[in-house]
Image (tube, rainbow, N blue to C red; front, top):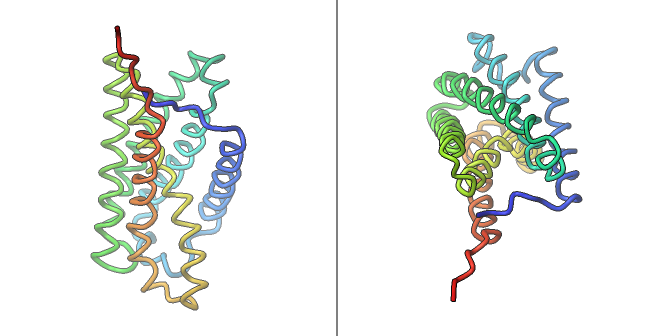
Length: 205
């Protein structure tokens, strides 16, 4: 079984990044996307709003699920919010998959975000299937993978900001790279963390 408890300082650092991303998403929904991204989203505004809105809810509720005190004291709400998280991921992932056919910088970006949508939905559905079969250990592992992909919303914006600064605003160069860099490293880190924190069964004597 993997330990899904994270240290308080890491949780709150992550919470700050999540809240900043949520605030950015709220501004985008109100004001509109940056000009470089408008060709991708202007023709599909409802899919865009579903992707952003449901993704924000998944980001917030997913973070709360990693708070050990919340899981311990509010077990019923842990289950309810977990179900909401599942629905939000599926909705946002399907919308993201549809939007991936018209990303801003062509087929390379398309496939990066398309694969992210597929893996995001798949890991979350597997996590749900595991808990429905009372396989708590593997449910936790798949939820770690799922939320690592949810955090692509955070890493994408961090990497895009840094990338544009380094390349003097070369969006067409940076964006295709970020279409993969925003989620593949997250998944690799999650996999290392799962193996590092996995509790090995005590051998019987």
